[in-house]
Length: 125
Image (cartoon, rainbow, N blue to C red):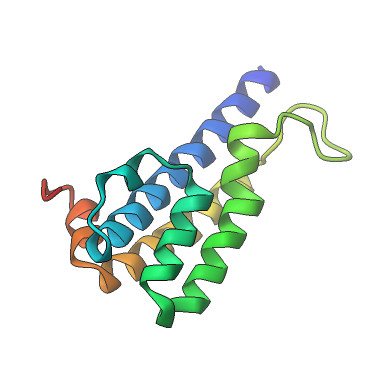
């Protein structure tokens, strides 16, 4: 039972990260319309976003930390943190991450029309 809970919390964080990843790529695409952006990893997408939205350095910094501490570990880090026996992320961490993710989504949607369209689940790309 506990092992499956760990899988589900990891999946939740990965899906939350996929959402931010998609919005970052949409915002980058708005400024640099090259569809190859949708085939790169989140880290390079953040770099492209940063290059195309230079006035958003604070948001870029937050996206880099989001990737380093949440998204990348959810996708690639299968070691358990010290003191944990069953899962990489707790349910509490997932809830907090969902709040942070929704905030990032709102910030990206305010910044970019295409990201807003993607957030609203409209086809625009």
